[in-house]
Length: 116
Image (tube, rainbow, N blue to C red; front, side, top):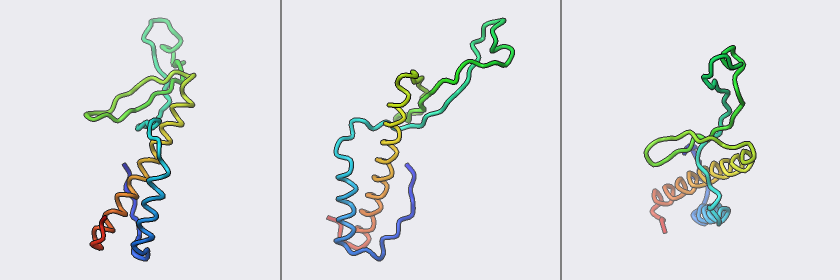
């Protein structure tokens, strides 16, 4: 998750709470969240005499670097699913950004002694 520096000093408690509610309500359905990043790769197959042995690599192939609980894993994304996976990864990124801002708002409210 990327944390940004937020400046909430000029916002009232009501404005902070309203902003937090707006952010939380923007993502009512999190079923499509996919955390990770997409990358395109070209590969060698390893077969002797193949064109890839001469430098003409196969691909490009799309892979998702998925962040798991323990470590990241690289998953192949079939061409017909690439656009949908890209949409879900972008959605996951927006959710992460919103969560970072909600957390920052909660920290600001806590600092002001107004956490509810």
